[in-house]
Image (cartoon, rainbow, N blue to C red):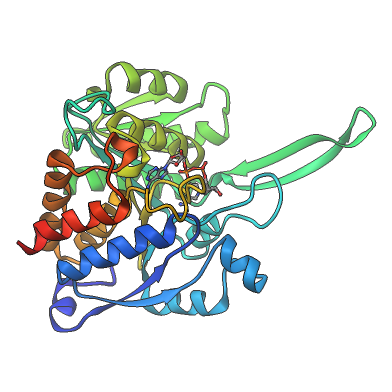
Length: 351
Ligand code: NAD
């Protein structure tokens, strides 16, 4: 990775900060305030991307933002809205593909045991999602059918042997580095015999080279979804393809209390973008109601990434204690505003 602990000890680390759409600016403000109280060694380069900047300037990914990302190679990014069905292509997907951020790491842990919203008290699952291929890289077409010129839709997703090997290897290396015991590969190779079949075939080959060091098993994605609801403690690290990973990580966040608690990291060979799993939540935008925990926890992953593990642990502890004692935001059963919750976290960090 490009960012070493020794570098950080001497100078603040430049980070591109993208406040994004919807609740993005509110949770970004909260995260900045918490990181400032923590004295995290980041120097922000604030840039824009997404639907709101597109409305103002005509482009969802301005050249300035790209230049900043190319320079810093490190970003904290709030959610970016993408129009459904029509309009511009997802900027999230564009960034992951352009900068080869091939691994999407989505850890989920029970933070509030016994809470009504947490379905289980012992969730501790890391989902690793292939981030640049599959249906998210698909060419799509309308074709004539039944007299309708757009009566048929065709989507051609692809995967490569090379990418399957890289992501499954990443999952096993992650397991070894983080003391994890098992990797479960999730696929749909019974139906998508090539697209998902290649992922399974290469995954089995990679798994064999870790035999005796990390346990391995497999699930078909529909059965995995059901087993996550019934008995999630059987899962440790899950590795899967782009679309399945996107869906299952939202499902797993639901087992821990919801999207407001779920952080994520997009990792490449020499660049990383940290973000919440959730989207721009337009239903909450501008109301001071959003839960900033997911983006704050994403910033803790960024602290880990640059070698600041002590600060990351302090931050996670402050979040955990605040969630346990309250105040909590409405999505997890409380009444606190974004600002009240943020202030409570800051008080813990500074007292
Ligand atoms: P969403 O994740 O924005 O919201 C789903 C539900 O979760 C909503 O009820 C919302 O209020 C709630 N929620 C999400 N984050 C929350 C938070 N921090 N605190 C409290 N409640 C929260 O999903 P959506 O509504 O399907 O998508 C909205 C937009 O976000 C779309 O344009 C989509 O493309 C985009 N999106 C972006 C990203 C990203 O930037 N990485 C990820 C997913 C969706």
